[in-house]
Length: 608
Ligand code: AGP
Image (cartoon, rainbow, N blue to C red; front, side):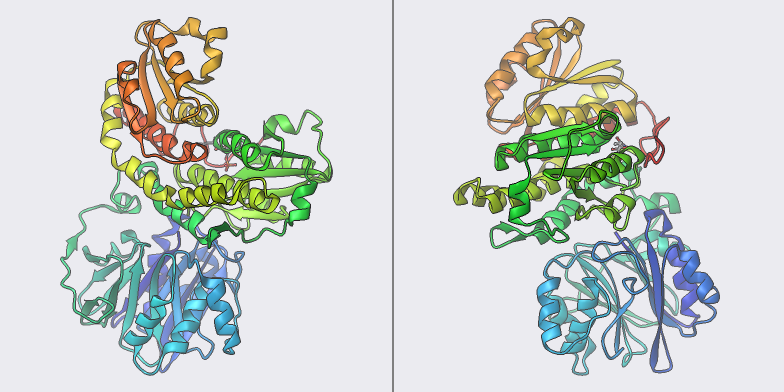
């Protein structure tokens, strides 16, 4: 999510760091900063806003002397975008400066421990905890302090570290968040992404989890946490800058689809503690929730489709009535909203004009606003009483994938949180749901690993002009997103239909060879779906079924079947939507279209 660069060599570090950060601008960020070692001290410059703000404040880096430093562009997760929340973060005595990409799941516990030991904090970030831990464990041996510090961290991190006592040594370490080492001549580099160092070297080490970098200007050593030397193979980068920005993939959409397991772990895991859902940034009490007579979910496009899943899940778990509405409709129908209504506002960008306007109308009518947003400090986030951030990281492709998936997981978290407080589900059922939710990212990973199966069908059907996506319950809501993905990136006309509704008219459109994607993952609706599949097949439809492993029966009725791993029914949208994202993607690729920038579309619709 954030961008990291580091330099140790003979040239001035600051201009290098700024130019490296500029190469990471495509990722989107809200603040930037650098820390440079010089004559026994570490100079830190960091600013909210675009890189230009920082650059101007330090005369493009020429104001800061030193040949060893680290830099960072921040995509805020913990703590609003601000100068003080920007990286690098320093330890209390100033001995350490740290840049971090990732999420420390246990940072609040660590922050309490450190505060009780007298450490004072300046920021709201999880990263500052790392700088203070380094100080706490430091007894003169930098490597030892880094090993002890990282042993305390749960979650994901890529770290760049400067220590005042080690003017010739840059340390770095990765766990889950990407980090590479660039190998130069008389200088070496670290970066979260290859583009940052492409202009200087094409020889890199791609770090694995728990690999510790000890870099001087002449030499780079990689160790495990027991200080055993690791022999790394040099990866020679033959990408151009554009390919490098996509991690070597051919599109941001593909890269972001494959990032979904990581994005889901970052969004779900920090919110599950000892079998319960604990939500940060939520002040809503049990009494507040008991008072709600209705829950209204509003959003546009894919965010609206998340709401459609949310209706089924929240009603099932909390027994509270839930309405879902397109924001552009909600705001013009004089909605029945008052201070007993909870309005859940879903938006990746947090800047969608229709959604903002609908939220403001609801707020004016007295409703409580809870938003699910991917951009910290965005308009919708700033105007909500409660926020549940998705930690998908920057989403660059116009067609949403990882943001949609993390929004779904946010809905599950909210539903379980409220049901737990209201006591509307038995403890043993709650335990099952919480465990299934925790395991969901791994199951999404398994689904994505089977993407070649989906490509084969997409390549065969890339010339179709129409397609139908049918399902029941949460499968119907998931089908809506599958249909939108196909439409918006491959320009194939498609419709999502409640499978039980086809016979009331639309089935007249089914003719020989019409592709019907039958989303049949829900165990509750499986038998009914078999009948609906039979209905359309009898009229010549070709069936592509998505269902749970073991339902061999369906192979008698569907020409193609994609099996998903077993999970709780309410979570199946998270496992059936990625295959449909991939289907739309492969059809679009087969048609030679631009999957990242589909015609007529914008990433954030900030106009009505
Ligand atoms: C999804 O692929 C589309 N790009 C679009 O429907 C999007 O979901 C919608 O515009 C809402 O955007 P938001 O989540 O940023 O509010």
